[in-house]
Image (cartoon, rainbow, N blue to C red; front, side):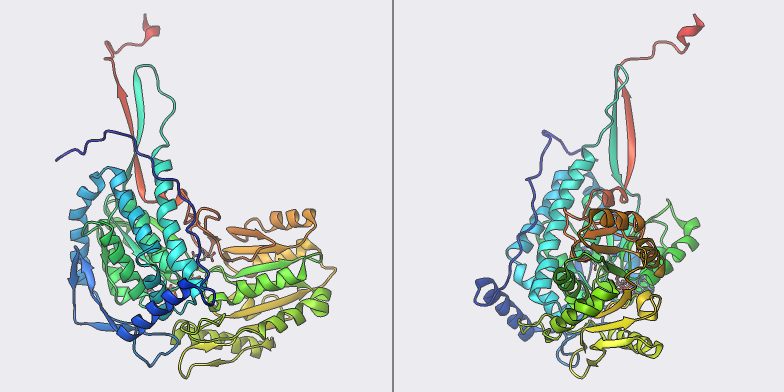
Length: 549
Ligand SMILES: NC(=O)c1ccc[n+]([C@@H]2O[C@H](COP(=O)([O-])OP(=O)(O)OC[C@H]3O[C@@H](n4cnc5c(N)ncnc54)[C@H](O)[C@@H]3O)[C@@H](O)[C@H]2O)c1
Ligand SMILES: N[C@@H](CCC=O)C(=O)O
């Protein structure tokens, strides 16, 4: 086995958040993005194979990723579905490729992903945005945040975190000894399962294990296959060797089942719903006797996020932040605002009218029409689920103040919906909806903060994001203390969504996930298995102790 020489301690370039483009009318960026979207719309459907050991595998079992704004029109892509046998082949191939990858000096692995970030920021910016717009229905603002900026940030900041992690070494050394720490990859392979709603999350779920020397079997969401395939292709162009990330779209149960049943399954890197994560955890538990090691289980899952407005809050700010929090990307963010608590008199006197007046200005349309704030929800099953929850709220006595209607004739469009409830534990206050539905509870002005916070804390099983709006520092601090465990992301006078890599590491606890904080150093700990190394420079001489004389 060859040993790679190391002739220097390298340092990554200093990283900063990828600057966001605005795509304002008349701008060059907007024109270029429009061209990219038009060209993509004309050329689709694209053919997407599985990728195993760098080889394009066409299985003949074809499925398609539709355009949610035009579900009966041309699909964005037609993809070949993997099956259990292909998963088996992919795992064997990944394990063979692993040693060479893991033995590379770390800066070589980092260089692949630093280069991928630069390719996304430049050559592929508009293409990856176009794929995210047409397939996942993100408008240019939301697509820019996700597919361009956040993907680059995950990769660049991630490499920096690994550099910092590797630099954490024992500082105490007995005389004539040297202690070291080696951050080995896990023994086996990592299974990455990604959601539809963030192209960046698919990239990050595979990059995080890979950059620290693991190999990854990737099952993307059926509703994000094309953008995720482009990410794979960009990683490859940036120098990712064959077999390190195996791209396996297709039906979840057989693909995931085959991976979880393998003796070398070493870690799950999942983002998606709480229900699916719990199902996977149980499957892993049932297989525990089979595994070589105890698998690492990392999952970031659902949310039921809140804004708590205090009596001295800036109403205009709270209204605008609530609209962005609840309705951008049609509420399809794990962090989306979904429960709003406002003092009753503030609600009746100003908040309600301002909120409804602003929402009335919102227009919906396909992402190819740049003027819209909102687009369609992702798929038929989402549309039906959201509408049924609105119906359930209506039947329970919830007051639908706006929206509550949809049009699925061409795309899956649902109007921004606000429900006022008198019952703080009503159906849409408790369940994750993942759509453009905000439920408001106007709490009595004289209700003590302890009581309001107790309601917020105990209403749902989730603990992902939450915000407080107000000016009285004592009340803000008290709310922060009372709601310490109600969210993994806490915001003051800021919406509960829109975390930025390097600024607000992301994750929640309770039913919302393992809180390993994507976009921080701590996530990398989950995919390494450290080895402590002690070396003595001088011989012991004899075995006896000094006190023995
Ligand atoms: N906390 C976070 O960081 C975060 C970020 C994004 C999304 N989410 C959550 O993700 C959900 C929305 O995304 P989604 O609709 O893609 O989620 P989902 O749970 O339906 O799917 C996520 C992934 O799991 C796969 N999957 C589905 N059923 C499976 C099964 N039985 N076995 C194995 N794999 C299975 C899907 O194909 C997909 O790849 C929401 O609940 C949202 O809150 C959380
Ligand atoms: N990082 C994102 C949430 C990702 C979940 O969908 C945000 O905070 O908006």
